[in-house]
Image (cartoon, rainbow, N blue to C red):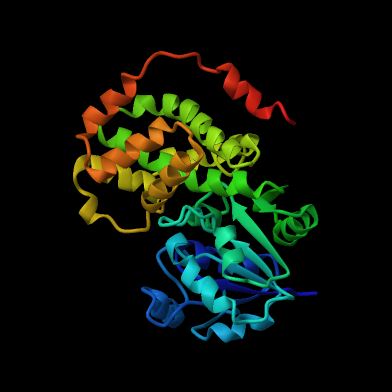
Length: 333
């Protein structure tokens, strides 16, 4: 039986989810506010610079049309989610599964997006997170990948992953919403760090960045009550190739442009900028040392010249790579 699915937000990732949902046999409806950049052109031509939509996808600016959908996939910028969630709270979604596809944390509050959904009173049948490596351009070119569905209930995560699985995307599932949400969001901050290294012609340090960054993110996840092992899975470390190295990564591009002084000339959303504020809010709240993330924040704030900030990071005292405190994070498992 066909599944009726709506995608809210029809930009880079939203248009991909419309394309992909149609590919797996769902009946697709796309929504975006009428004043959203690029949406009218997508309505008119059925394509954007990333892909061309199948003819059977319908686009609308009327949010009430989504109420009869079995699945709602949300792909708006993370910092705009609260406003949308407030509007959705007025719609009866008790028979609808909601999937969040954004990788961010609210800048002002440090709240995860699932926490915002709860706070705004979304009354959906289930709430899941869709994260993992890949770019729309690669998927449309038939380059397969593995991705992740996370939900606080196993049955929901399994059901959604089976509905969305295809020969293009192999899904894993998780019940660790904290680890997967924080890991996916923090990955974008590390992407900015990678871009800064590229801009400084220090790309050889990316290996060290890949080894050290997951450890500080894992410390934060553990302190928040999540499973630190999720950081070493698809939500964070598994997405590094697509974020730290890919020429398609908006966050890496932003970091490189910032280091080169050309950031004004780039386009595309870099979620890691706002997320870096949120991650540091959480790090301070939970008393977690996150030197890489803090250095990125100092650089973006202009507190230090870039090379001076990198030098300060390297002047930290030598330490054991895997101290006993790190190893004990999984002792309760």
